[in-house]
Image (cartoon, rainbow, N blue to C red; front, side):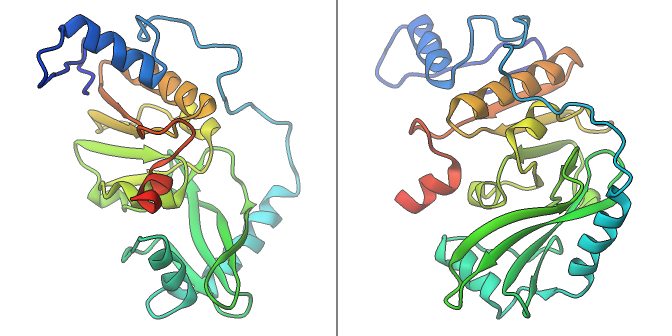
Length: 241
């Protein structure tokens, strides 16, 4: 399914089904309204809200980035073991590993300026299995650029989780880390096509619809892709497969 500049999408049935019934089925499965392009966002659509000034934020960002500076490439580390256990791999520069506390560390950068603003930490046990996750620094308006800016040209993919984005096999792609950041993802200059890999739950689909509407209204091409299983993301789908 692909959304064009006019907001339309095409469907194909190899069983000879009526095309309108097919479109209605796709809308229902993805949680799209009959005309998602012009329908106002629901009140419960995840959004990033403005905060009061936080005088401690610069210090938190500096502390978070020290974790990044002291981390090493993931090759041969527990971070690589963890990703492999999920059926994933990564060879870029946005993920590192901290040996002293067994943490997979992903660099968070401002979605517009690319300025480093924090780290996303996945804490691992001695066998390379996930214990917990935590974001340090500033998460507001931050993404993990799994693909570098210089690799982004005509199109870009986005999703929520790091593992979700890696599971898609799509490039270039950025992890937004939350439904709220997906919902608020801004229209960026030079990108003509956005592919949104949505989590198949209410928050994920609402966020994808809000983002898709914004890009459509900016006359951009938008594609929303979601797993077939309700409640799943693409990393879940890969594990099941």
